[in-house]
Image (cartoon, rainbow, N blue to C red; front, side, top):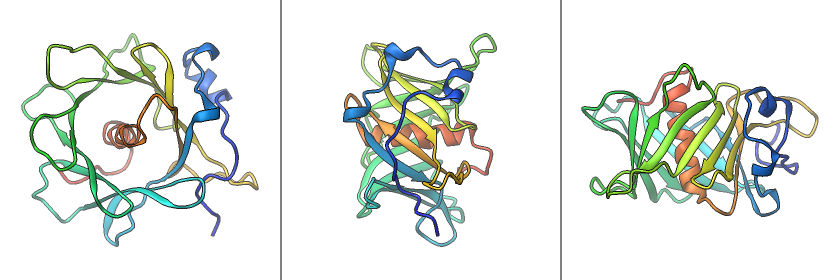
Length: 215
């Protein structure tokens, strides 16, 4: 079986990025200091839907395992480290219009860190979602996601309009495409890798073509 974890150096410019009109090169990701992860849309556990995330050496970094048979999780998705420790919990925001989600630390159910809203605007189709603080007086957007998740070509920008993370299709050394279930997540030094992976999970919930996790 072809290895799915990173094995070639990432680049920040390709034809798909130009096609989806992502911001120009002066907002390029700091590749020299970026963390390159490979995301596999597959759970380590049988009969589960989730994600398995590896670093460049093939070490397990993150995992998401959601039993489809479990009906009591209230739309909850837990991002764990390699040992199974919960890092972030993602919950759909109840009683809200639109596709809105809350991101919590660990397994807590109070004081969410971020509110993530699906962007719906026919005049701006390249914007996918906005991330803002979930509490406090500051409601400014701290991250904006642009591109096409279906094509695995996305960029995350911070409040200073810097490109801080990218989602890109991955190819093996021999040039054989893995398809959309295996892709790269490239995270710059300005952003935490767990938060970047949380955005991948949320994009899959908002724009994924397959069945969502149990809600």
